[in-house]
Length: 111
Length: 115
Image 1 (cartoon, rainbow over the protein chains, first blue to last red):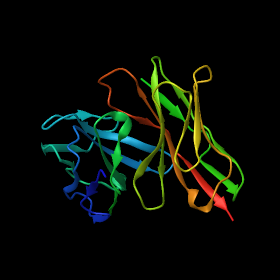
Image 2 (spheres, each protein chain N blue to C red):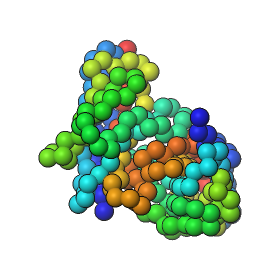
Image 3 (cartoon, rainbow over the protein chains, first blue to last red):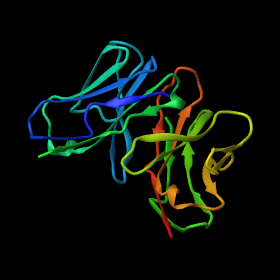
Image 4 (cartoon, rainbow over the protein chains, first blue to last red):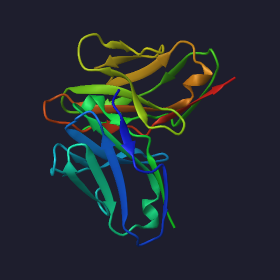
């Protein structure tokens, strides 16, 4: 079975802190994705990556950056966390877009 | 660009009753369509997909969806729901041309089963 793991299920950070969210997949997938999920807004794509060191902006990249130094790991970085970044963050990986495998999510609260 | 509309944000249904969750899409090119399910406190899982061929697709737990090109719809149905179907359901679309790896998700429908 494909497994996508995220470093934390719950995270509480203060405004202005630098935040790292880590995602690791074990199926040698080329593609990896970061979404945020908010009530009534569904999933919105923040960044995605087709390959190591490759990254593409999604629909809402402002305030975020990403890093993909190894194929299995995709990190989301909040350079200076703000309260409007309080959300559920979901990581996914895929060989092809229509088979995206999701991690359990990280619920981030910024106070 | 493509978009997905799920008009119903919440659908309460009595146990063993039928249910339909509506999904409409917009795209200028041909598409692939998906339903994902998110059980409480979990990530999303692929429920079923339409890529080509038969317009009626089924999942292993009794859900089905029908691709209707003329109405640009991909509604999800189940003839008899169970408590375990309580979850949030997301419709998603991607363009079927090679190289487009992004999914566009709808806003989700929360299905609540009433005992």
